[in-house]
Image (tube, rainbow over all chains, first blue to last red):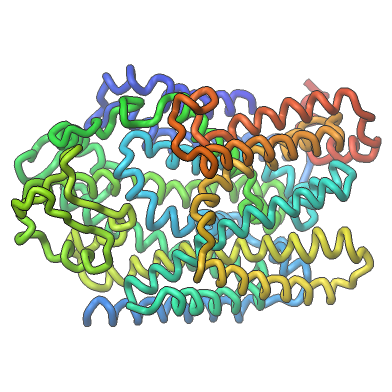
Length: 67
Length: 566
């Protein structure tokens, strides 16, 4: 879970806010990269994070026979 | 058929649908009333959470706000979605596992104190009322703009509908109407968005069209965002995609506001309670995923709509003659949402910084979108129905939270411990009815502070609830003294800072703010104070009783067992 929270922090704060200016120098398609992280990418990453978490916890639940 | 006839038709049809669902899902037990009998499937709960969460502000105002803020709009995009990661990982499954009906109940039990329960219930009621007034107002505004009904009649019609399904159907009624409302609002948001994306960039998927190229006009072939930055330079405004430049918020402020909104989202009582309605902790995790998927659909579309609307607005109106403005400009001018003040008397609209002659309300970006994109009348009507769905669903969720805080947390748990569940259900229905009436009153004549306070409700939720819940779940040793000290100091600090800079010294600039953090973002600092104090005070007070420590271990299974075996 610590890893997932670290990814959460990196994608939203580090890429979307702290490094937005240098990243805006790079362009992916029509997007400045930092702007894309702030307006789009972070939200996709959030969805993936919860997906991974829910799947990992399902496995834990099964292994230890809870639920 | 004209727009108004279509609007009457679609709005009446959706209202009939909501009432039909409410009748079908009416409840007779307290468990049904508070948590829908805990039988809601994860996907349905995800949709209901989406509708519950996305208010009139998300649907009507957010794209417009982003449109004016450019990059800085990310505070809403990230702030209002990132909280779901915290919710799914740190709170929802554990609170569900603990069971019971409300979040205040968890606080009261975990911190073995009725005082803590009372403080939590009080915060719940305060946060929910400030919110609900805004929703009722939203209902009135949609009615008055699309159906030409007076605002107060609009509010009354909305209240009657909410009354019907919240009081009759309780959480079960609310849940299934919210599922229907989610479908209405997302369709209403996506159709105009896809149409305008197609019109401007030739790609019907807004998320892709956002990064595509402009199709027509002087800037054909240029990337949309580059064209937008160029238009902003022409108007001597900061570039749309630029961050932290003069005229926009600073890095630390953006960080603090995003954090306060995320943590505040995770601590909002009407969102938390949705996770009590599913079958298990496992279902709570999956429904958090579905909720974010459904919310993300709107939240990734909104910034695209914001950019399209901005390009469209500047390129159609700037330097064009007032006598030749398009039809939609005329029709929205009568509502006062857009107005032209010809300062230099040349009859030409100038939008450049310093000489601006055009005043545009943020709400127009979504409301007028279908007309700007020249879509048929029924799409315009659908947008009205979508705005109503967004406002009503949020209002209903909040009402239920208020009713349970009063009837269950204060009534059943503190005042009348031996109340039968029949009487409790009656009390819950009565409090919900009273709350509806109070909300209607606030909607018709909003006290001046409401609009100010709604934006800060997140900061208050962030600095009070979140730390106490997280510590309650992840530490065994946080004591009741620690929790109460943390909660009250966090909310007092945040509240005092907001009051000071909003009411006493509203003229203060970024240099006067603590670390340059605006009142919107100060909840992030309040949260840190709350965490720190709760931990320090817990060190010096008597540790919690053994059964409370046992309770904490149990809700964290199987993580505990996994940790022991490795």
